[in-house]
Every structure is written in C-alpha cells, then in structure tokens.
Image (cartoon, rainbow, N blue to C red; front, top):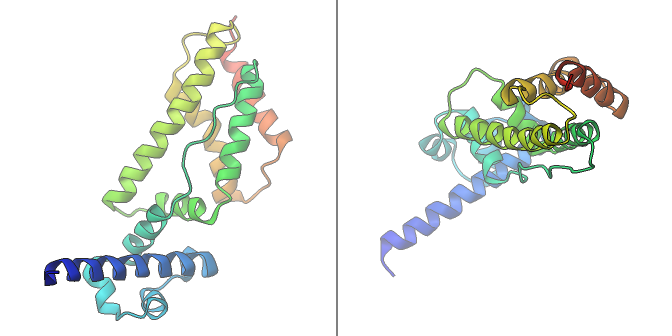
Length: 193
C-alpha cells in the first residue's frame, strides 16, 4: 500500500474522529459551549490539527452537524383537508427541530456567518420545505379549498416563520392549539372565495 493511500485513510479517520467529538461536545454543552480546545482534547488531536482543516469554530460545528444530520425531509401528510395537512406539517417541523443536530443547524443558520456548506444546507432545507408546502397547497387548490393564486414561497414563510420565532426568540410552547390557530389565521387569507 502506498503512503498516500495510508495517509489519506489516516486523514479521513482523524477528520471523522474530530467531527464525532465536535458533535458529542455540541450535544453535551450546546453550541455556545463548544470550543476548539475541548473538541481537540476529546478527539485526541492538537488544536492546530483542527485549525488546519477548519478555520473557525463555526465551520467545525457546521461540518459536524451536517456530517451527522438527521434526515431533513418531513413526510407530507395527506389527510384530505388542507387545514389538517398544514397542522400536521407544522407539527412535524416543530418535532424535527427538537433533535439536537437540527436545533444546532437552525441556530447556526441564524448567525451572521458565511460558510459554504451552511449556505448549501440552508438552500437544501428551504427547497425541501417549499416542495412540502407546495404539495399541500396544490392539493388544496385541486379540492377547491384555497385560491389558486397563492404564492408558495410567501405561504412557507408565513407559516414557518412564527414556529421558528417561537423556538428561537420567545421560547414559548408550540402546541397543537397554537399550530391550529396559526393555520386558521393563514387559511383565512388564502381560502377560495
């Protein structure tokens, strides 16, 4: 075996070990508690080894989260009612945010940092959410429940924004009554007339 192949394997093993250590730190102490030094110690490497691969703590955390991320897609419900579908979709969104990895990614996504992989993840998540909402809205249009002129992007932002705000800003409970009220308020504006 050539030294290049062996070096590549060792490099990958070190990278994987560091990412696992970073994720474990994240799960144990949260985004704010993760330090490069604590990750280096947990991974059994020097701090400089980490900084050679990741220029910032945020890049390290982002890579750790994206490397171990729970599936981002949410099953699109089909209850036969646009209202019930939207409530179920928002409940799934809120539940998905409770995983430590998704919560960390959400926190990182709100920080004013520029990381290519984070930008890619933001776009991927938004595209997946757009598809989910569009599917439900198109079925609602076909059943005559809502107007065919609904802007899907605006609908996504109008419904998901308050859930994210509660999770990130006010830390208020997101329960079924809240989700039902949010969907009813939304539907009042887009019902077929």
